[in-house]
Image (cartoon, rainbow, N blue to C red; front, side):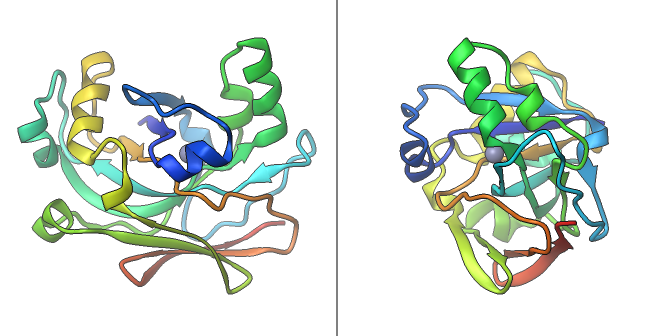
Amino acid sequence: MKILCIGRNYAEHAKELNNPLPKEPVFFMKPDTALLKDGAPFYHPDFSSDIHHEIEIVLRVGKAGKHISPEHALKYIDGITVGVDFTARDLQQQCKEKGLPWEKAKAFDGSAPIGTFIPFTEKHAQGEINFSLSVNEEVRQQGSSNDMIFNFQSIIAYLSQFVTLKTGDLIYTGTPSGVSAVKIGDRLKGFLNGEQLLSFEVK
Ligand code: ZN
């Protein structure tokens, strides 16, 4: 399986990092070794002193597809949860300045903690989805699917032009504003429509 991630999908977050608003989705990938499941702890790596949390709605692909049209896109999704797209912001900044790819800053081991999946329903397809992240019980990030620059349908249609989606692939759909560094001892919790689906500690 692979993990596809969308960058700069919320205007307020693009602004806080001084990034221009994208005209088409920005995407990158993480390997399966980035996944952190079932509340496993995240071990803070030594190579960065500025690992940022990015809470995101995550979609799980339920059947394979290529060149998917926006109107059929949601039929390819069978699960939804929240996940954290950990980003070594210091390394990412160096990559950006040199015009290099971001993998070093985005794809490292444990950089994709993932919550418990719940079925993707008509309610998720039609309605607003609220999500949030707390660190040590304090809310740090809050988002709404209504604020996405590119919605689920356009993300799936766009990605599948370049990369065949396969069953079990995950799509991280971008983070709202409020990103900041984590430190050893922090407890992170992720919520989707008020339901806690993710909880883990930084060690
Ligand atoms: Zn992200």
